[in-house]
Length: 385
Image 1: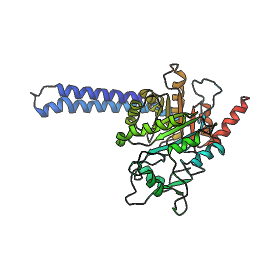
Image 2: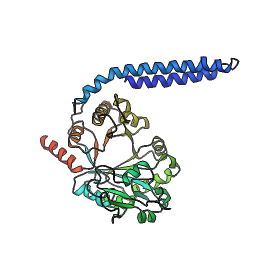
Image 3: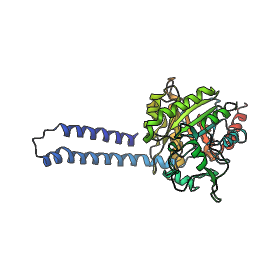
Image 4: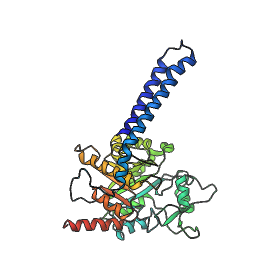
């Protein structure tokens, strides 16, 4: 991986340069010491990195253009099993119903043929875990969603425009959250709909009666700045799980390294996955952002890879290459403690869904579970199942 090696070499040499500079004697003139022993070597080091980077780009660009012509080439390694991916309804069935509600989850399973669910969770000021996406209503993504600009989903969050109740979920009681927050139509007058925000306890009470439900992914929205409430957050989740003893698997997701580290320290017995996203722009070497390698760093059994947005140059090509690389890593792993499964999200185009099924991805999150269900159904018929 040329680009990754350039970065690694630069970081290691920079650290070594700083150590040598600190160890150098103070008897020399400060300006001379700084210029000769630090500034000039640092400049040369940066030039070395730049040359390495340019060489790597020249080497990788032809590969990128060649990959651009392909939509779903055959993977290098496959297990050739009859396994099919979990069909994961995104926030229940966000393209058809009000996200993160019991009604959306019911629709995802019964009407749109999902067999797994992904829901977002936050914790209120009075210690209630709720199915709600936006931890802070003033976060950039939250504001985008409130404006109805999130693609594919049918409804948008309804929040106070201003005032004392426009604040993070953990500063509101459950009663306040349900009274002042909710959902509205994306293209109509922003009037709050009659769609109650459920608690995790209410969700589990409903979910344990659904025999077709095989797995639930709980996307924990707690940010790194609120790590102090993570113990209470996890304790409430664990208490709910113990109360209902669900038949389905449960995987906790987070996008934050520090949250993941603390989660595994506080409650190591639960299943975890950390979200991985490719950076914006031209990604010449997607393998350098492996979700499997990131999962292995934390000792997780599940890896989680998100599809890039339109801000990435050729997002599907970059994502497809990353998924192929990561699935090859999983295929190579024989150690029972290694990463064993990959969650791909959020995929809605039929061609892309077919490709990920072909790549034997373990679970696919989609706003349209009926599309993925149809693809999986045809695959099973072709194999005589």
